[in-house]
Every structure is written in C-alpha cells, then in structure tokens.
Length: 151
Figure 1 (spheres, rainbow, N blue to C red):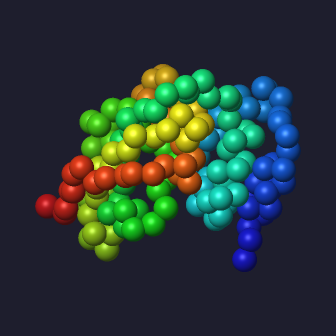
Figure 2: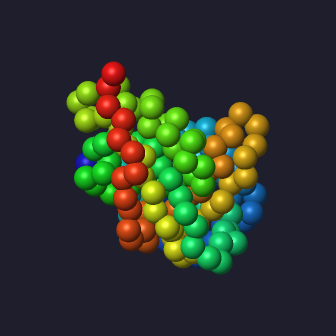
C-alpha cells in the first residue's frame, strides 16, 4: 500500500525544478532523517524526487565510493548514501556487524559515474561523513571489499 510519503515524492518527481530555498531546506531534512527512503517505500520514486530536491551536483568525472551496510544489501538495490572514505564506511559496517539475522555487514566499493552522483556533501559539523548521494540505478560494478561478522 503506497504511503503518503510515496505520493508526495511522486508529485515532487514530476516538478521541473524547485527553488533553491526548498533544496536547502530538504537537504537539512535528508541529513537529519536518514530513513526517508524507507518511509517512501519506492526507491525509484525516491531517486526521481532526489533529482529535483537536491542541490545540483558539480560532478564531472567518476568517483571511487564506499558504503558500509548489512550483508543483505549486497543482494538487493543499494542505498543512496556513500562516502569517499573507506574508514567511514567501515565504521558504518561495524554498526551492522552484530545483526546476525542480516548476515553481518559488508564494506562495498564502486566507481560511480558522474551521472550517478547527485550531491557531494562536504564534511561539516556533527555529520562528518563526507556523504555522497548517488542514484543507485546508475551504479554498475559494486564489489564487496570487506565482510564483518558478529564477534
């Protein structure tokens, strides 16, 4: 059953553009509420809405990126938030390593083409992750470079 988040993001995705003030406000929401894609429920809808809601990316060349996540993610579509720092990805993976039902955790690596990069955030304040937001539908080769299992 579609959620109201899903309906809202579908409507946003149809917009040709939004004012920069909206993009700035949305970015703060994105930073504070990392589970927004789960609330929307439809990853393609979220990807389309992000293309409208995020500030414009200046990426012109491919970028090596890392993601720390559950091992289950390796079997399905990947998340939107990645980092240029393998240690940051590893720290995220460590948070998931204890989830036995998820099969532990992994550190993933990809070379994201410029067209996949929706936003490169600089390290700032509390959220010092150097987050790179990507359209996971434009990622091609993703490899697991490390597995972390429960101790």
